[in-house]
Length: 294
Ligand code: GLU
Image 1 (cartoon, rainbow, N blue to C red):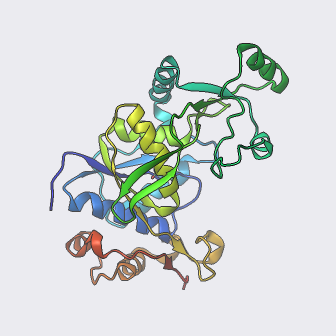
Image 2 (spheres, protein in one colour):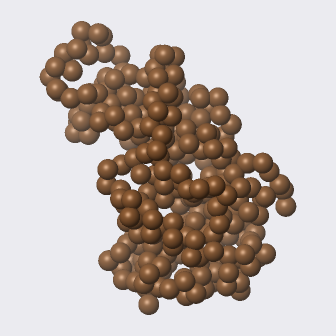
């Protein structure tokens, strides 16, 4: 077992109560951190206005009820907006940002170069002249988003479970038009600010990691160790959701939830402390956990 001065973390968005799949991801993030001698941190990702303080409270209470421990008081992203503003200002001073006036629809309908990667920003606002920018500002009547002027189209990260993963890096948004820092920027900035060097989360975010690692490099931060763990799906193969039945800790109960999580990982243990003794990243399931609420 290696020891490290770094940290792992779990970073829930308080838009809905955690379901059994989110809880399992949190347990895995904790196991990864603790088994490598790392600190474990909790960060509430509440920048989006569809998040709620009372849901954050319940999420933290549920995670504590499972036996997870964290080494500092949980932080909330809304507590320190100036941290993101400072990074955005720094990128702007380096000439790495441009204003973007596009709506989603503009992006979907924009003409594309024949070999442009699927899902990439088409570059509409990248090279506007000052006069064109002024005209767009007047036409749209709303403040622009800020996008990163990326000088790559793809970037490779290393993931403990997926190996080398190469994914799209386009001119992605770092600050939304309404002034809110974008997820890709905020997470990278917070991970670096809190010494996080291990990122364990659901594999729905694997495709975001090249953008985030590229931004981390631009900001002079080391790339974290990534482990993107399989999601939990319902019997139809869709992402587990509240309508699938009893999926939250309040509905399942702590002992049963711990038993289900342990069983899904092939462990006999019934507490997270005991799971630590059985934890081996090389033996983690590589396929989704199909969950049938009782
Ligand atoms: N807040 C994100 C989510 O709940 C996770 C972000 C991350 O782990 O980087 O999906």
